[in-house]
Amino acid sequence: MFEYKVVDVSVKKAEDEMNRWAKEGWRVIAVSPNIAAGYGVVITLERQTFPHQAPSGGFGF
Image 1 (cartoon, helix red, strand yellow):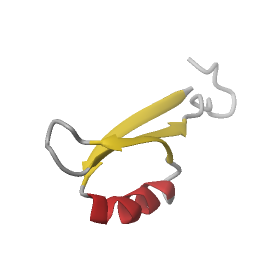
Image 2 (cartoon, helix red, strand yellow):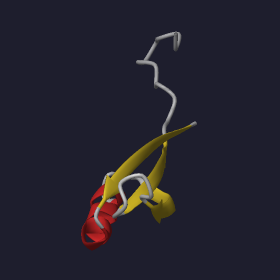
Image 3 (cartoon, helix red, strand yellow):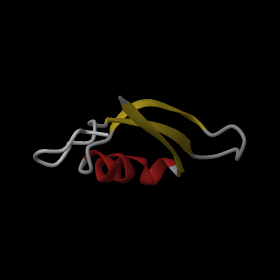
Image 4 (cartoon, helix red, strand yellow):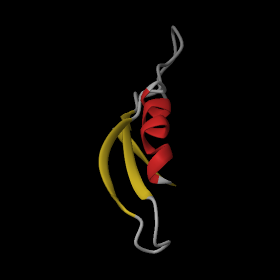
């Protein structure tokens, strides 16, 4: 399963922002101009989530 995040940033801060999220396990899947605001970019991020691990002896509910 995956989770997604969308962030908007200025073009000058985009690289730093993408690297910051990458350190937390997110990867960039799209970058597009922020037409609504008239400046900056919208970055779509994705990372894989893992199913809950049941404690030893648990049933995994």
